[in-house]
Length: 458
Image 1 (spheres, rainbow, N blue to C red):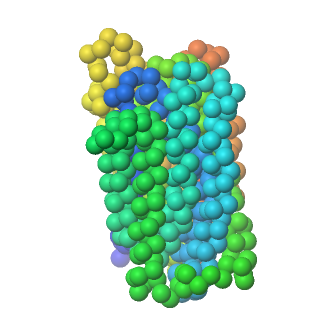
Image 2: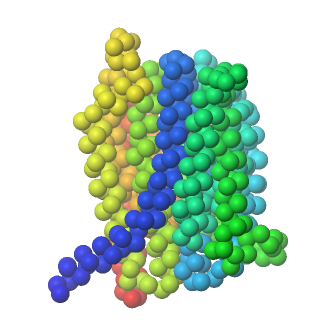
């Protein structure tokens, strides 16, 4: 059989291995993002001012929470590697250290959310939106700890091929979120109308309900018995915690740098004005929906590459990476087409297009969708290759590239184009797109070099 045909068969086999895990992870994350999407639609009914506030509110919440949970994402790859090597007790050790670490991480996050108002004032955000954002975060602090513990349990399920349990728990959590958000935001069934604070309390209810259900699964299902999850022994062997830090701190630093970058970009858009914030929020809501499957695919790629490495199936590694990349590019092409062809339909979910004031906002939305169509494609390549490299325990190079691409290229270009060349919100989006393009090229080159080395070992 020709070499090209053999290569195609190998990539097809790798695709079949990745898709079930990626679909489960992507489905779970899409449920969560879709729930948030519908909650923002509820807030939009409270008026343009609340919609503008939600742009900063959600971007701040996502940025800080992802920074906090980023170190915990190393669990799925480490557990996947232990699962491939059949080191089952190590899986329980990793999870227990993850629980402890999540508790420690939750403390500074809750303090930051409690004092969010002076932070936003320091960054000269519009005074009209700060009280609304404060209301949300004072309610949301009750969601921080359960969400971080849920992340730990999800990482165990992903690494040990029990991802269906995560979908069940997440589905129940989203149902709790939507019902409680509707009741608490608008004041239904005798409850007070809490507005944006109602969304914060609803997210807390979602986090606790998902956590309780996942813990029941971990305690009662026989497939978890061999990991000895509930015999506390984390204090006896801190080597697992050191491994988490050694492997996870570059991931954490990279994600932290990226989330802070997104936060700074949101702040710069806030300097332009409430209309730019509203337009950016509309586009970002749909971009988040398209990024979630890519992020899930990136995590799935890291897990299966880590499992192949643990099993010493080095010949599979390159094909797993390229199969993931092919899936991501197909998805990016589809979503880019929707952004370019149907901006009016997408904007109509948030804007009354018959209102003359919203005409200007829609004009911005249409061009931002066009830029996003390209930037999300570049970012998909960067994320997939970063996930593949993490599966090889190569976490530092993607960290360096992520920091350079966003902080030394994207942010300065965004500021330059927006405020020096007076391109406004379009300049910010263009600067980000150019930064992720350069990052995508560099991590792609790194993956080719590393995967060829493992291919030769086989």
